[in-house]
Length: 89
Image 1: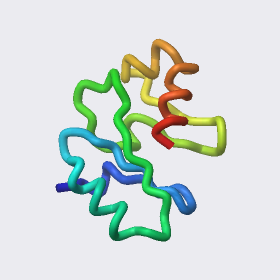
Image 2: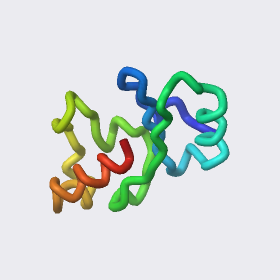
Image 3: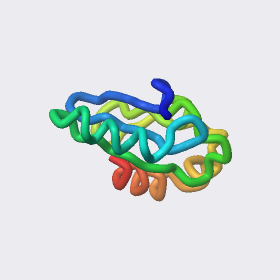
């Protein structure tokens, strides 16, 4: 099961957020079906209701994101968040 709002395309990368509306089976399906893309699956801790990946963060260019200030993890430590997103990405 997956929600299109949990998937974000940036060039040849597909970012998929595991959360309330997208499960691991969907992430595996993306990896099988979209072989020409790098499928980046992950979770961002600190978001108690993970839905709609663009409500958490939006990458603008390498090293620059807009983040949701209400997501505690991102708000408390931008440097840690960038490392997490780097692992996510």
